[in-house]
Length: 105
Image: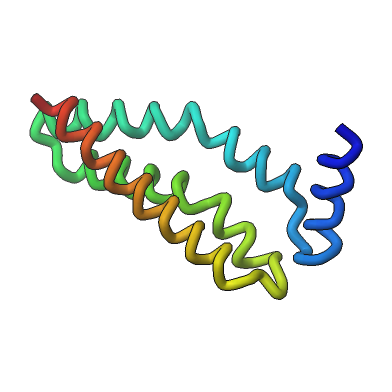
């Protein structure tokens, strides 16, 4: 356990990003994420595209927010981290679109 705490502290010192804050932002977005998916599906079923667009924007912000924290406060972040973040975001978007399409039926 001490190794993990030391590793997390080293991330903060090296890259200027507090992994605990990143984790809190990421975990705090779980309920709003699912609520937004529910609202997008509901709005699409009701034919209300403006409402669906609003909740879709909220959903996008929720997906990107933890990575935005790293973008704003991080320093000297290696390229491979940005590639991983990009892949996670792309996967999240495609996965979310798939869930919404399944929910619309």
